Image: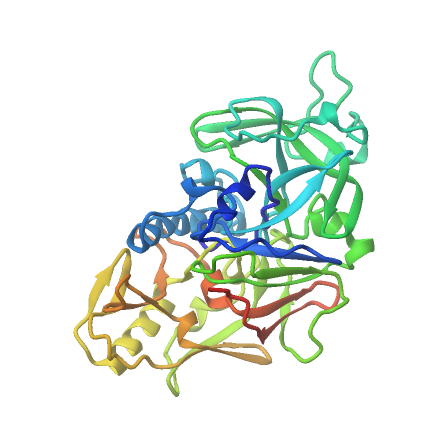
Amino acid sequence: MLPVLLLLLAVGAAASHSSSSSCPATPPDSGATLQVSHAFGPCSPLGPEAASPSWAGFLADQAARDASRLLYLDSLAVRGRAYAPIASGRQLLQTPTYVVRARLGTPAQQLLLAVDTSNDAAWIPCAGCAGCPTSTPFNPAASTSYRPVPCGSPLCAQAPNAACPLNSKACGFSLTYADSSLVAALSQDSLAVANDIVKAYTFGCLQRATGTAAPPQGLLGLGRGPLSFLSQTKDMYEATFSYCLPSFKSLNFSGTLRLGRKGQPQRIKTTPLLANPHRSSLYYVNMTGIRVGRKVVPIPAPALAFDPATGAGTVLDSGTMFTRLVAPAYAAVRDEVRRRVGAPVSSLGGFDTCFSDPAVKWPAVTLLFDGMQLALPEENVVIHSTYGTTSCLAMAAAPDGVNTVLNVIASMQQQNHRVLFDVPNGRVGFARERCTAA
């Protein structure tokens, strides 16, 4: 699935992998800017077990993650649709592909949190959690600023499936996902991001996880719901943020998440944000077409049209890696790419438009939005095999048997761009910015 923009806050053990001789030192966070790293890259802050052993293995793993995430996003977008895929542990909360570092409690405890642009949740595995696989949970008893949220408070009413357990005055809530269930205590504590402190930050302190998909780390949602990070910090950051996402092969926390209006680019191409009252967390934009070379490919209007009633349209998501288009839109792009390249077609790791000739000339691809065009450099459109002999179109249709209504502009197509989310002014912007470090 396309990674929603997830921030992973660095947990203690996470630093050990990136400190190996082949991985450069992590640059410091500063001001309201957090460094961003790919969660599954060669210097993953999640540790060596998170990094794929090979490029082919990474593509296979990521294709599975993307497919599962697409189902998840589609279930969010469509009213009344309640299915959710059964997925591996790293997918329970649809953890996206990018991570940041943060600290929770007094004294501060280092944590890894996934930050997701398509999610409002704030989950953190806590000490004593039964079934949570993390080795470095947050310990509420060691924090003098930790407070449980009491039953009957307005915050409790906003939590999913809120309940007050017997013999407890604290607000609890639960989530059922596929074959797993989570039980958490709604809690508050001091959250430090870069040089800023968010006092009384509200989150779910995980107490019990059953099934095979328990989350290994926390989740920080950058959606727009009432308990999201964006909503809780609106007085500090004015519901505005931007990021530059490094590529999978980047060896360091070379990307950045910039919170607030200060330091955002002044010259930037923008397109309006669209509002879906049924799913306000998703960042919808109006994609009007796709150009391959100089030709706007023939995509049926309903394949791109925004429809709040059905959830159809186009969303930006940091948690999906490779852009997924509804079948008619993808077919139009794929067929024009194949026609222009004019070489024998093969497949690789779930991608169906690949060419084994290393001298292939790829046509330019441009995404067309209301008021803006986004011309994608080849590095945002093409993936190469380990030895560079095969190259593939880095987009795909929905998985077989999935009748999705969403087009998802994923992280690979966003990499090495400053992507601005300006919620008060109802716009999303793109400016080219190189943030991949070799």
